[in-house]
Length: 315
Ligand code: SAM
Image 1 (spheres, rainbow, N blue to C red):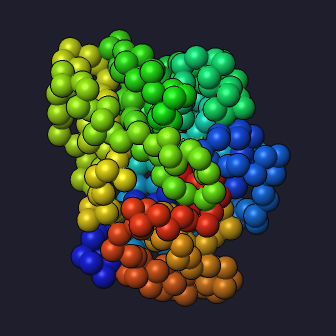
Image 2: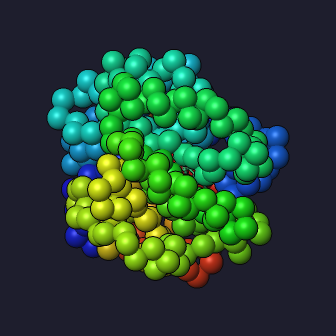
């Protein structure tokens, strides 16, 4: 359906949990706290997605928190994948628990994976996330073997920490059918001094004039894609700060407790709980109203920090 600014909303990011076992320095600073907002059941997520599809949603990405922490993640994938007419179902994961699961996810109906990997150096990865790089590398391999393609690696650059690794990430696209995407650090939640360490994608791109621009894979794609001539994978730049792409935004977010957030960068949220307790028509109406009122643009540039961090909203 079209929102009040005529944008066609076709993409849903569905967070299935706020829980995460990592503590990425720019994402969640509340050390040791593991918020446990209400999580809906697989059947409730299926109902929400079905209602969204009736309003024009065609693609769904499962996220969190860490979606693989849900013990019933395969059932969630199965139920959503079975909805007739869905064009794409993907998942964003930190891959800590991916080894041994990629094939099962594929069988359940998942089509693609985005894996977050901010450093290829074990000690830097640990410093940034508190996690272990080994399962991520293994999970990546298994994801490619399982055919969860194109597999995309998300990299958030933080000045002085991992900005020296840009070329190592680009080198991964030489032989592998993976896309590496550099995401500008966003002022979401209380990510403290990290915001001052943001690196503009323009800076990264202009230092690499050999990158050749490619057409977008699909309309409304947030990344600008490039390729090193002759390499297999793409290099994408997602630049919400230096190159706002709100005019083409086609997405909404539903958080793990069933709250709809029309824009990542505006703290306006619409709880669907009471509509969920009613019939499908009431649910559709609530979603329709929320989509229609989607804000024109995020407010990151005016430094209005979102109250929730990404792991609570669903990145
Ligand atoms: N746990 C999953 C994961 O790590 O991929 C999914 C959730 S995580 C919040 C999704 C993505 O958001 C990750 O790639 C993470 O790097 C990114 N992210 C978190 N906080 C961010 C911020 N302030 N700015 C830019 N990206 C951020």
